[in-house]
Length: 101
Image 1 (cartoon, helix red, strand yellow):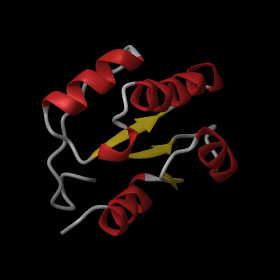
Image 2 (cartoon, rainbow, N blue to C red):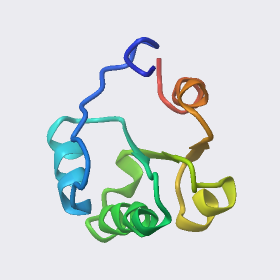
Image 3 (cartoon, rainbow, N blue to C red):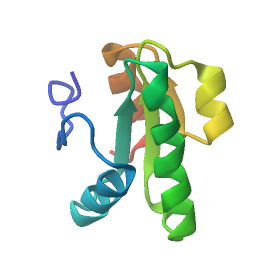
């Protein structure tokens, strides 16, 4: 959906370490990281990505959007994400709002 919406997407796949998300985003000079969870057991990794960026002093360089079946706006706010999208179509609209044209 994001590609169809005009965004360049680099898909790292599944079961990616939080450090690898951050490294890839910085290497690609990404404007945002999108994180999705299908199970509650993977949700802590979303917070870990944000914490790594904070620790490295790079949190202000990327927007973080989160979504997926178990994710809520409340969770997104609690972990410090920039936005939450309940579905792929909403993620496109969210990115249009959060990212420069």
